[in-house]
Length: 125
Image 1 (tube, one colour):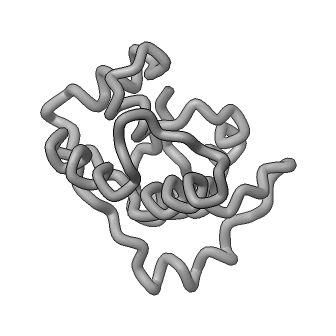
Image 2: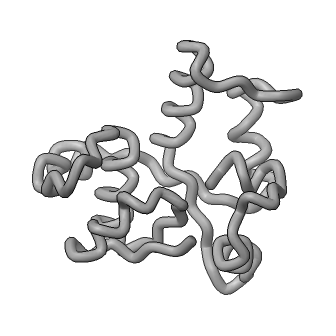
């Protein structure tokens, strides 16, 4: 979602775009997302056009996004998130866990995350 929002992409759903633009909502971006982007760039799995991973936090701040840190408490309790289906991506699962623990809405187009709604996840796409 972060890259779509930064690029003002048409790939951002209408619901997600409305959620981000609604000034009543404080929109967070997890530091886990920055870590994942940086890792993917370093491994050659993601190519960014016209921007480096180092610049993304500044752009996020310019969009009035608030950084959500990964706290030790959230990291240490991550084992409590059940493994549902075949969804094993550790970054995505941590984003799910952060959203559940912090009682936040997760913006994601990943259909595999829908199953985590039974664990208390609020999801918009």
